[in-house]
Image 1 (spheres, rainbow, N blue to C red):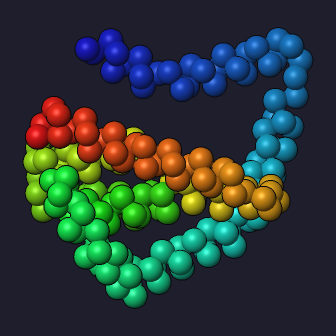
Image 2 (cartoon, one colour):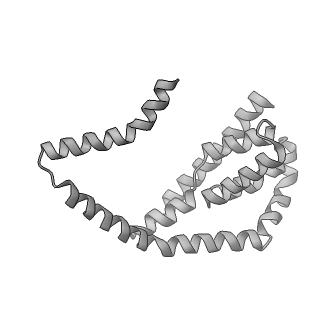
Image 3 (cartoon, rainbow, N blue to C red):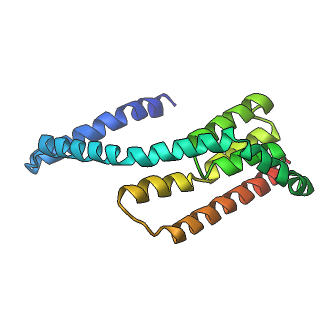
Length: 176
């Protein structure tokens, strides 16, 4: 166990050292390439800011308006038929939009119900089996100028739904 811990601490510095040694051996201008990559990264970050700001404002409006609570109340009778806790709906709706907001909801569920509860296990499994589809499409597609993203959005949302349903089934089978 100690060996793995030590190895994990040394992995990144050793990797960087190996890259630098190989680059020096091949006479690659590493510092110049590093600076060029930094410039590209900075310009990419600046181009992402409007998309990120728009996404954060939209999420805030969605939560503050009470729309999230209204949607949960609509789904509650259907979820009761399948014995799915309604407390998980905000996570299911937020996860495709924002990873940070979904993580906050998961942390709140874990704090309220405990990590070993059915809801805690379901929230953790859903967090790991879905992705931030709207965030990915908005940020990455927007930053490179892709305008037609309908098919990618459909596939991403269907994948999120499949991940959520699978998480519910697996957690119910194992811990239900």
